[in-house]
Amino acid sequence: MSTQDLTGPGLRLDHLPRRKRVNRTMEGLAWLAAAIAIAILGVVVYSVGQRGWSELNLNLITKQPINFSLTNAPQGLSNAFAGTIVIVGIAMLMALPAGILVAVYVNEFAPAPIRSVITLVIDVLAGVPAIVIGIFVFVLLVVGSGQSGLKGSFSLAILMLPFVARTTIEVLALVPNALREASLALGVPRWRTTLSIVLPRAIGGILTGTVLAVARVAGETAPLLFTSSVVGVQTDWNPAHALQTIPVAIFELSESPDPKDHARAWAAGFVLLIFILFASLTARWLATRNARKLAGR
Amino acid sequence: MSITIEPTVRVETRRQPIPPRERLEPIFEVEGLDAIYGAKAAIKDVSMEVYKNLVTAIIGPSGCGKSTYIRCFNRMNDLIPTFRQTGTIRYHGQDICASNIDPVAVRRNIGMVFQRPNPFPKSIYDNVAWGCRVLGMKEDLDARVERALTQAALWDEVKDRLKASGLSLSGGQQQRLCIARAIAVEPDVVLMDEPASALDPIATQAIEQLMHQLKSQYTFVIVTHNMQQAARVADMTAFFSISQGGEGERYGELIEYDATEKIFTAPSDKRTEDYVTGRFG
Ligand SMILES: Nc1ncnc2c1ncn2[C@@H]1O[C@H](COP(=O)(O)OP(=O)(O)O)[C@@H](O)[C@H]1O
Ligand SMILES: [Mg+2]
View 1 (cartoon, rainbow over the protein chains, first blue to last red):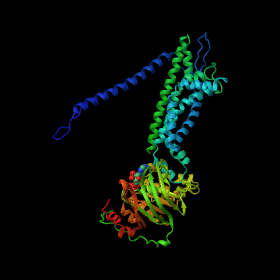
View 2: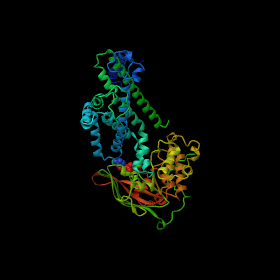
View 3: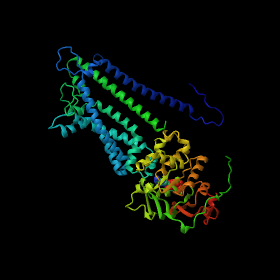
View 4: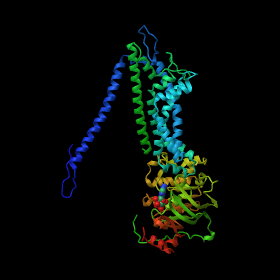
């Protein structure tokens, strides 16, 4: 597509060709970067899927693993899928209310100095490596009393908390002050205004942040090695027991001599990858749907 | 509708005369009020009384502190961290800024309509009903909503789509919805900060009629920079202007407060006269 340049007496055309060139170069670079990102994702998904293809079937999620299997009996990683669902689900139930409360306090009630201190703490917490959280929970809760899914959930919840709090603070800040004023001017108390006017308006953004946080921690391995990794092959839904999880299972299977175990690890990784992809798309969808609803359409 | 451009403000004559001052009941008594943002005073030393069941207009050039002032009446400025005020505002004889007074209780009695319509992202019905429900006025809610919407001259336009979003209405309708929301909870005073600044003439007229009809039940304080509007709706008018202090400091000041008739036809201050005759914008 080419555009006709404006010409005529008195028109300012200084540096026009150069600006056009710069513009085209920048556009090209941005396009290239985007293409590289997509290509990397494509290669990862493809190679993981391809290596796990032989084990990518229903048995993967319905059958338990078999220790030292000498036969060709079908096996899977149902224990790891159950454990991940339980541990991540409970982690979400812990982190969501805590993160929202922190964010509500920071954005709606805290005086400015306290607000900046807490924001800083949240940022630092978001940067703490997962393995440090893992060893912290290990020393605090596991030493002496043993591992459990609940302790794994707790460590994942610590990882999720700053993400949920951060995104919630961001969306709460986007809620127009005019809405708070409208409610307060009716003589509605502050807490009620927050609960019934501010939070519902921000809920889409909060959900988006939560889904992304879940997607992030679902693949965390280090904290779970400390808190929920000494496990059997039974499919177990009880969070009081140590539960197998997908990332820990992948880690263990990768050290096995049996190539079939490797394939199963790749297959489990593929499922995790697809889950994260799906979660991100859901978050995206929630965000746009919410934006549309807020615009009154 | 024909449009006529009036060279000067004509004060409406069909307005009922205000009773003599001694028969008026003051609802607010403002004394020596200073309103300050950070280190900068927005208004200084304002003293006046607002009378019950009258419409009081606050006029003056942009930036003279009209919004700041009207927001003092229901402690809306509490939400601004840098804000502080000195002096007193007594409401039915009680200092509304006293430490034992709950701002929520103040706002419960003194409602507010803002310059830009701010309906909740809820249905038309819930925009009006929500406040009533929260404040415990739950009996006959449908009738209450209908009454408020009727008083706000909106009922006929929305009665068939009460479930539609409040945000789907036009700007003028949204503002009337906000008025309905404010009066549905039966406050004692309704504060309006330039309620018609974003409205077309027909919606403006609807709001003015509403004030005429409802002033026997409520006390209205309205900020406007439209002098015709003040002349049409207000019984009393307060004129604010920007004054220069030492060191180039600029702050808003109450210049003159009197019956609207007097302010527009025989102002006693030269600055008021310049403003109402349009020599100063
Ligand atoms: N939130 C605020 N923080 C600091 N200064 C403010 C704030 N709101 C208003 N002001 C200042 O106070 C003065 C009066 O403003 P305002 O009350 O909005 O005037 P008006 O409504 O008459 O146009 C202006 O100088 C304005 O800049
Ligand atoms: Mg204003």
